Length: 389
Ligand code: PMP
Image (cartoon, rainbow, N blue to C red):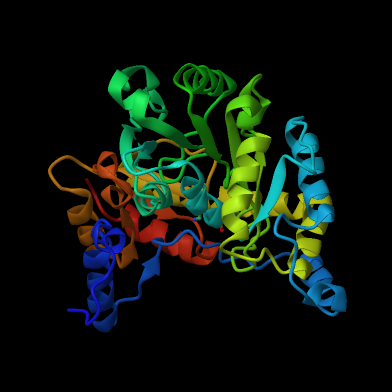
């Protein structure tokens, strides 16, 4: 019981589905079991040293100690635009088509406030990163969930969205490379998304937080590469995963100028931007640290291969991810995701996230995050391989 009655928007939040696994994790740890935690997607690798030393200099500049501009320093916006051009061949105007974010989560969470009125809908994938639906809820709207199924390569089937839903929908969230399914979209899917957005007059919000965590040289495309994409949407980028900078809190949104401006309007009333020293460092990283991102990919790829081998030896099924640092593993028939995660924890000390924690269509899977040291990944692979399903 709380003394002060909370607002409906807080009380309406879906129940915390990881509560049971958290309780068990504590209980198992107290019994002295050596836990290996694949639950949380937060890189264990440090920020590359070139970025850290640049930050030490940037922090000492008094010019950075004052309030930042709301839209972000021009130097940072130019670096983001130059990176979009170099990486994807996408043309972004640094003055009007990009603003800084306090991590991509912040932008994703605030965008619905610019467009969603009570009664409006967001189209949200299931399973997905929970922010899309909670931000919609906070803005007074509702989410209509689009299942991501294995037989559709974890892409939503837009053709089945009912007419009355299309009429009420203002936003369409998509996320590729995808957390948690590890699905990757191609240009043809993005073309269908542009057509769908055009004919239904809605805004596409593409979350590209994992676009630099890819394997075997298969670079995921940008949504904005597709002709007409900039007319209907924006893309959210993050430095968190690309440069192991989750704690620094910096990202950007780019694309449709009208949408970028509307999000900026919300932000000017809520936050005061990103510490300029961090923007300076982020601009440097975007221009100079491709090699560090490449080294990071190699580390995750090695971990992916080691853990996947253990999983396959145990008789479990999964697609080999070509991007993201997650494994999305099918569980054997006969148990729920939560039951299977519990079983795995009790038998091996391995913590995994039950797939239904990301939405109903995640039932039948567990997610493992490759953000623990390679030594521990080896240990985990060995423990799993001794199981048999
Ligand atoms: N999108 C997805 C799909 C994520 O998984 C995350 C973080 N786990 C984010 C966005 C947010 O990243 P950040 O705010 O650090 O940029």
